[in-house]
Image (cartoon, rainbow, N blue to C red; front, side, top):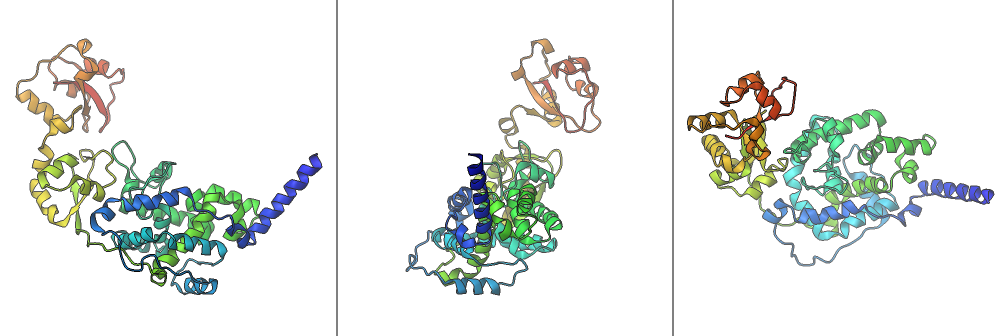
Length: 423
């Protein structure tokens, strides 16, 4: 029995190695990742597509041509790329995956000008091949709000830990993985680090998808071979499709016209400017005062998860249609002061405390009688202590506030939130 098991093991190992050297064998079992497939529906329902593109309806839409292997290979070889784009049966099947998703590709062609100029500029700044922009097609179908079931987010589909390690702010209010500019900068830094490790772009792209650990494991199992197609069978199934889909995206975005594909009609999106926010604001405040659609604010600033810009700790960027940037500068204080109590219930600022005290609302209850719903969050400023904060609340001393926060330590740091009595 043990001998039979050993023989079977040897047989399957040999079959696996043979498959790596013969892409035609693997092509028969080729399938696209489920997330890649789902991203197309998310693209069609994204704000820019729904707001700016017309429904596809052109004559001869269903007619399309496939090409022969020699034509596909020749076209790929002519692309002015630094990254090598080999052709085989698996790449052919990947190209056909795009061709067969005709309406989705045509929406993709329409939305490309919104993001690719920015991505190319940042890739060039970091000295990276511009064709890496097509990774965003495989990762997210150019949808900055795309989220995977595993928790990856944004154009570049960063996992939380990786995003944080490359400087992206991710917390309850902010997720910079959804910021197209900042996530592209982080992706460039990550890709450069991977290239320093492997020095070969197909392995870099594979590692971007499944992590360096999985690529290193595949290299070891392939007896040290460092050619993607030699380690193909040892990689996770999703990554096996990932590199061919990247090659196919390069092909499709350059040769779509040969397959009777046309960019969907798209109005030119409004030009945008950025303004710096140095105080806390809610999208409802901006939307109401500037008369801008809140959905447009969300589409332009997807990194703000709860429609809140926490600008009272450090400056944050807000992207607006250009014609509204000047209006924002003129009305910034009106915006920041609009409906504060209704939008920020449960939070308190020094300014609000002073305003309430000026109105004579200074009667306080003993700490032991205060329920949790009768307290609010107070953000500690630089140099403040329980002693200085207690002075703002007649009837309370520093010890009362410490008991209210269930702490024996009097240490406070800038930006920390503590509980204080609700006035």
